[in-house]
Length: 269
Image (cartoon, rainbow, N blue to C red; front, side, top):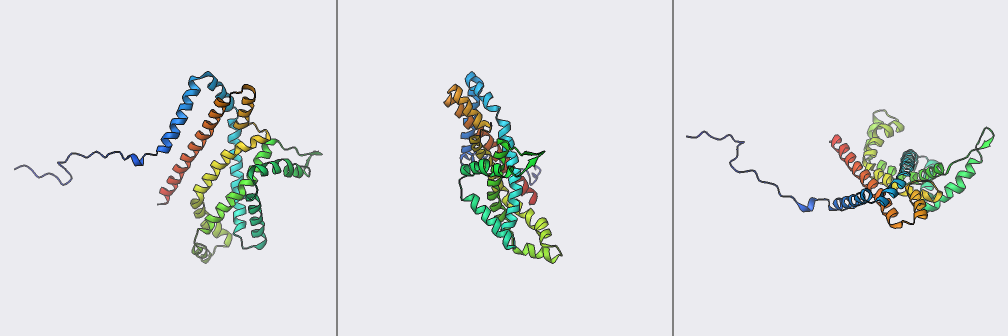
């Protein structure tokens, strides 16, 4: 008589899982095809290649403005967010007033106001070796983006802090922590994990809104594209490539942030 098969052995052939077309991210496929098509045109068409190389000269400025602005806005936004939930009446009202003022004015108007009115007025008060401080247009653009986006990031931190139950603070205080220690070691780490997706969205928003500083003459990729068009009149080629630039950067950044969020979630569990 044949020996009994072990329990783990199956006489049935393995079934192949069918591909579920509904789970395919078609939006990502579509965007990938657009980027791939533009990449093909850049490689195969000398005119597209020339324009691409021209626009590429402004990429470093775009990334620098975005990176510095986001980091500084993150720090200032955290300070404003803590002030927003502070029990100190003066700090709370100052933070709320600043946030509501910034959020009530269009970003482009604020960029003009900060860059050509506020920064020059403040720089007149600062002298170095007897000379007034000179602030470059790139520095003015960064200052403007920092002051603007700090208000939006402050609201993100405020929402994140308020999402943590009050029991967490009470438990930390019962262990002998001060309010500041409890906020630093207990509340803020949890709040940061909660607001990471929103902060990622603001990073992408700053990257896109960095194009607005082209009105100041900062030579980032949008300004470089405008200057290229003014001499070559290649509107279609230039603005298609510029669109592909921003689309690629925001897509890559979005995918990296999603990966980071999943990584952090898996570490927590």
